[in-house]
Length: 602
Image (cartoon, rainbow, N blue to C red; front, side, top):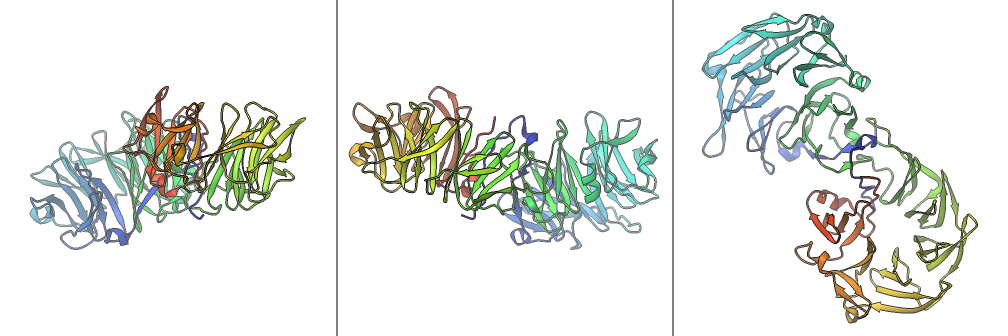
């Protein structure tokens, strides 16, 4: 009951309206068993990730972690995987490369020792770049240019704040003066870059065809079109200025800012939407020292303490982050501009579309609706709510109790009787009747059947299929006035099902499908028994046990069990293709038997 709210929303072309956070996987220092800080990130052609760690070159092959110390035992400050299959690395007064040997281990080769390079003053090597068949090592006072045979030191008479190799040009930024570009072996001041004087640039990045972005720590972002430098409106300048940008990167579609005080902001360069991740939404801490896209266009963060993997490409996003103040999620509903969330702690509301900011989504508890909420459903423009304390009608931000009902599971309109609603409470089945514009409790249904469950469906002939997870699957025949049950039939082994337990009924399109401990069934009315549903069973390697089905607006069917979360994507009538991998990450988060999926839009 403490697993947190789950509401699954598939983000389509309108994803900018959701105030969500990307899913995050944490790697703590105790996991990778190396230094706390991670200053740089690169990816090998084998897809293994490498980090400039306080204790050395940190390797992650997707399963195992290993640290390779650099020659003088100090922290590695920058890393770069080169096309010549080397991983260049640097630290204080030292730079060189790691190269993998036949035994699979990396050996370090010092270029400083090989070329007898003398350090000049403070010589921390901060960044490494590759371009024009050369490797560039940027320190705080000079740049070393390596062509594979020789190293040339390119001196600079001021402090270097940042550098970047962009559009085949090597740039450096120096806050006292502005931006310089490398011409031959000399640095030339870019005309008009005085606008960046006394502004600390922390990242230099490509933008569009031939433009360059200069990201500053405290003064926003600037764009250079080859002629002039001017401010670049990110739409989140206040956030960036107030939280100190430390690093940034781009893949051409997204611009990612890593800050000192509030994690990351991911800016969509096409629609200008922004998504935040910080300690409220899964990061281990808010100080981001390095950031890089991997080959799958997901994001790796080197943190002040730890490493985080941000799943930008996942279709799943986290609505509330790690802020678990609202309890376990059971139901939700969108009505007008209000989203309702029913949890074990109460019925909550929030305005929709959700606000987008760096703080987690804040919900409001509807007055008088504290405690367990099971169910929300709109019938004839009336929103019904089933709770542990009874049944309610929700009007705007007010809850009106339906008199005469105890704890209530669910409500469903009867197809052949539009003025009647069939519901089930802790005391069994009941009827609501529409009188004028109001829905009122009419009566409990009499008969030799007093079971209680949220799982029931009306068949085409008006009979009701009722599922109790322990006692079995029942077919109920009601009289014409719907006040009595005339006939109760239990469907068990004698009626074709493998057992009494875990038999549930779901409506997919106009068809009722029955799930059991050994696959899916359909009801053969002529034979009055259950028959294996081959079309659905063949979507799985073996007939699934206790698989629950939820149909989306587009006809896709979500399939959920204790060990499986997948989507049967509808291709044509009665033909589906199963995606059993994409959404499996949700499986441990779901309260099986009470999972809820709210299909907002595409």
